[in-house]
Image (tube, rainbow, N blue to C red; front, top):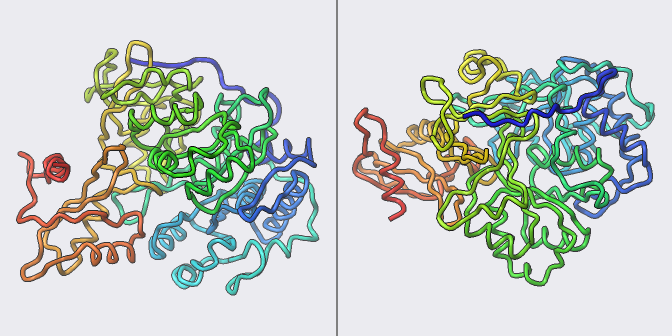
Length: 521
């Protein structure tokens, strides 16, 4: 079965204007409005933010940044990070984010693999820089502000540059960014996106209705992920972006009330933290118009609870870096959530086609499970320097998502499982084989199998079953420290199961369904 909304996504008829340029132009139309509120409460008006961004773009260009240069960001949730991403885009560079939670050796491999020409560091990540810099060979390393002991302050250096757009022609086929996701190789796969597809999402029906007033987005999850996309759309639509350094449920609730937040994005596990916080019942939530959730399976029970607490403001989303947003479950569609049934992830956005196909590639009828394929103008250009992997998932303009699901008679998509053995945790994605390969180098581990286990709230956790090496007795804390030091904390197992043997399927693969069942008994 194929579901699609064939309305055309609006694109400029005249000369192409990139996403970063579109956002900066919007800021210029109302230069005195609040554009960004930093985590410390500092407010930046639109005109000042745009001027600083233009100056930074000119400074980067003067230092050799041009079309085809990779600018890599070691940054957190700061106004400087937002500005740097726009400035690099205005200069024609492709942008790469180095995610928090990954170890320095992995970040170094990513930095090298994307041919980084300039590394930009903000104050939130100054502490990470001394461990990373000795592992990389990058021509230019700059700090986004004062206080760094390893790099020059590029913002101060840009103060004399023009506060106007640089004369750089960006086309829809030019590289925009490389986002990284988990993979079975040594480093995560790099997903290359172009300017044209990204520009088209600014016209997508996501976010609250501007007729209700200017949006106020709370970015409490990393700008390197979906919060960054939503921040772009909020600034473009005349709104304000309020930044928090990280997700803390109490801080989020206080910010919602203080800043009269209208929308924010969360993983379901973070939504559960909000529901369980003792301040939820005494927080003024009346300003909220949309809470956008997604990224992993959602618990029907907790969603019904969230509807009672927050009201009809929940918006479900299903997407991936390779395809941007695919489906949306609107607030009025949440009455489809029933006891014991998986939560649908919504219907395809305008311009997006979703097909359910069998292993033979044939389309399947409504209600029948198969692999989920997507066709849209927002698909990735491919995996960075991996044409082999690109060819596996992109064929004839269709992306094989690697997910399994079905479309019901009303065109709503339901997710059932993953073809890829992927564990989605708070902070990122974990491929079990990567952790297994690492743990097998530990002297106390003879054999192991890593698998995800969902709790009663549908939050996934990393478990590992280990057959100890002769005479050894591995401990969870020991293995967690071992993995964290080499891969990063998001990969570290949360639960250790010591077993005599790893059960196998009839074809000789680790039987993770059996392990998962044993872990949940």
